[in-house]
Image (cartoon, rainbow over all chains, first blue to last red; front, top):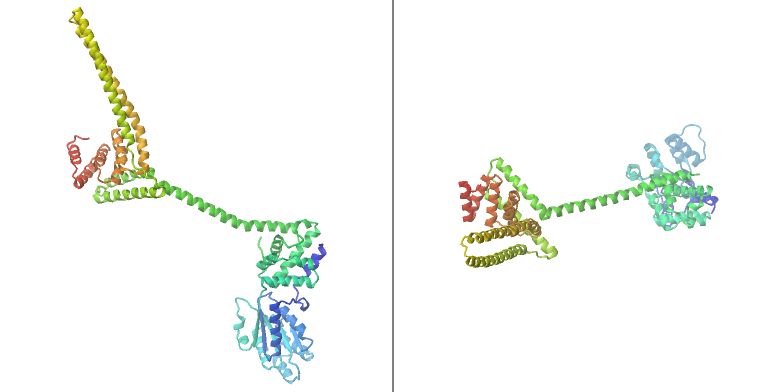
Length: 270
Length: 286
């Protein structure tokens, strides 16, 4: 094993939202299939919620990637908090129209009602908890016209019970919760991710014990696990660059190095 | 690139911290066990008769204090009975515990007393025999002298042969004194042995013996303690109460002694106690 292998392996775990990096796990695949079916139903809104790092953005990205070839799908990863800007961007994307002047909600509704769209466009809004309440009310009114569908993702936090919010409680027809990976799922996730990139040697280094320990530290959170494993490979690479390959076992991931990675990213306190 | 040396240092610090908790818990458990051990040892020591004898002066202190306050509660029969009952119960419990634990039934042995008595008897017998032998010898010598006198017909020689046996008798008397001193020396050791025996089995007969011996040796405080202990174990031993009262007199606690005797007489109608009380009141016993 050389430093290049660890360098390439670490890059697999870079925290990026790319549909190509989507890893199919049984439970997640079932949830994804359910989401796809929900899209075909005459729903006004679909809510995708879960704790940060559970793969909501990846889900949305995957959905966009899969649906964009067959139906009009518009995805907004970054929230457009300004109302006029939001409707202007939406009109430009949906109707391919350029508005130099301001476009408010009433004007957008007029344009929408006049439009002759065959397939109902699907608008994917990531990080919807960042949108102002007043804009969310207008999004609700838009979905009531049934001329547009919304799939929105929300962070589920302990302090804020988003499901209880009025504008979601009455109108969401389907809500899907994403959760952290189990120990078994995390092992499959890590190995599949590495094997997908043809790094079989590094994939084999993760035995049940080491994965369990990673799970203990990250609680199966995909983002945290990615960060930890990225740092882990970074440490391996650093040792090899310093010609200190004797300091670690080449066949399996040592607990010491996982702990070092945990200390480095701050999930373990030294 | 990660600074692995720095990270290793942080890792060692983390490991030390993580083990520190276990170390603290381990030390805590050790301290807890040691504390328990020490406490149990103290408890066991408190349970031994040696400490019990130490506790007795405390009772005495209470008595003295109460006397100073001019309260007669100490002498109150109920209190004394309660104290004696408690001591009795403790003593009984201890004996029972010991019996249960080891099944070693230790009965008070008066072997040493009988040995002392036998030794004394033997000494006396020997002395008597030697005295008889000397008497016979003297008689023979007198006869010889009388014969010589008769032969020489000197009447005044009677005085001469009469002086000799007187001197020899004195010698015999001196010899009789020496074994008594030996007995006294042995008594000190005997008391120690008896105390040890008493600490083992709490037999009131032994504590009474010790009280008696100490009283004879004029160690009145000790005599008082052992008499009190004896009363605590058995409330109906007359001699123990007598020694107790006598020791109190010797310790300048006449009023307490009188009150104690009054209470005891009311309880037992003891002739000896009445007699002692009379002697105390008349000033014959001081």
